[in-house]
Image (cartoon, rainbow, N blue to C red; front, side, top):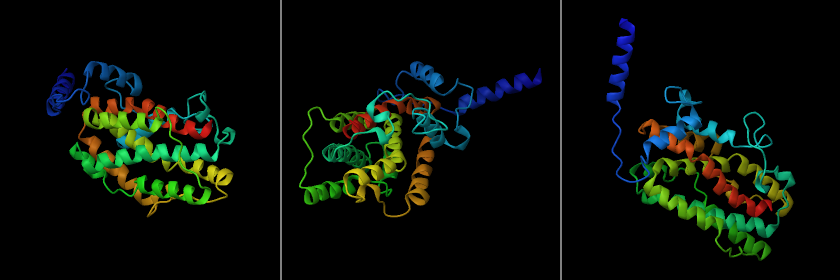
Length: 269
């Protein structure tokens, strides 16, 4: 009847009104059929709303990330079974001071890399993530120096280090696949203000005689000011993406956990 015809016309208009940019670089759009299939598997089929979509794209990212937590890490939303050392509850880790220092040094490579990319902005939107207040590179430089002066310790040189591997991935994604790069950015910085803080407190008690590192201190209220501001910017950037690009970003969550996990393993084992 009339309603069906109207609905079809409306759908056609909507499709016409959302032009999909041609892929200039491999990865930005990538193989769209593969992406659409993977996106559908990850976040519901084409016409369904993705979980969290009504609250903005960051909520979609958060939803996918929470499902990759274990029950111990996230009792309400965690779905993953703890199989690797770094997925076990922090209380079961057997950290050493040297392992923790190595974790900080490898993490610094990752933060420095992301912060340099946002400064250089090979993609225009990245400039919106300069000087957000979440930056950690210089705080980690101070902490590594503190270890040297306090405990006379320096980071170990690690063959095929997890930090170097992560940096290499991020540099490539930042140019070839911006939605995937943004997924890593979100997961690294936001996780550090949640589970990262809890790990920091445990390490402080067990290894650092109660000292709080600069890595866990921000100028300004991180939960009430800094995160909400960056959350808004992420939502704003994602509004300019096609659904395929959003799904590509969500798809990368597993890999961001894998690479962050390889850093945490330096403390957990």
